[in-house]
Length: 239
Image (cartoon, rainbow, N blue to C red; front, side):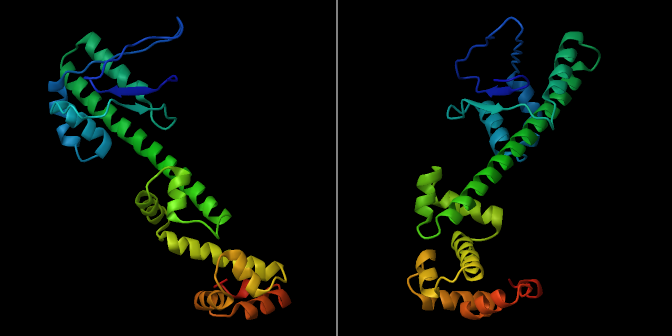
C-alpha cells in the first residue's frame, strides 16, 4: 500500500495491521454493523460492487469478497472524510453521532467515485490494447485469440468492445481492414489480388465487394483517383 490508499476488509477475514517503518501511520477503523444499517441501505443501488460488499456484510453473507482496494486518487481526498470521522469520535460534541453518520456516507460516496474512476481508466487502457492488437493482427485475429491474449472470456471482450466503441468486433475488424487496404492503395503498387491476401481475404472479388459497398467506389478507381490527385481525399469525406 502507498500513502493515502485504503482497504475495505470483510470483517470475517483474518488480517493484521502493521507498518514497515516508524514513520508509517496506519489507521484501522472498525464500524459497527448497526451504523451501516442506518447509512448504507439507502445507497445500495449507487455502485454494484461496493454497496453489494457492504450489504453482504449487513446480511452476514459468508460468500462476500475478502476486501476491496482503493488506491489514492488526486481527484478525491479520502483523508478529509476520515479526519472528520476521527474528530467527531474523539471530541464527541453535540450531535456527533449524526456528524459521524454524515461523514461515513460521504466517505463511502467518495470510495464509489474512486472505484468508478479507476474502473473506467482500466477499461480504456484495455480497449486501447485490444484495438492495437486487432490492427497489428488483421489476418488472424479472432475473439478466441483476444480471449487468450488478454485473459478475459470472449463474451466479456465482445461486450466491452461494443460498450466502448458502439461497434461489434466484426465491424471493428472490417473497418480496420478497410483502412489498411486504403493505405496499400494510396502508397503502393501492390496488386489488388495480393492486397486481398495480405489483409486476410480469400479472394480479390470479396475485397472489391466490401470496399465498394463501404466507400461507393472500386479499389482500382480509388487508387487511380488518389494517386493522380493528392486532394482527392480532401474533397471526398467518405474517405
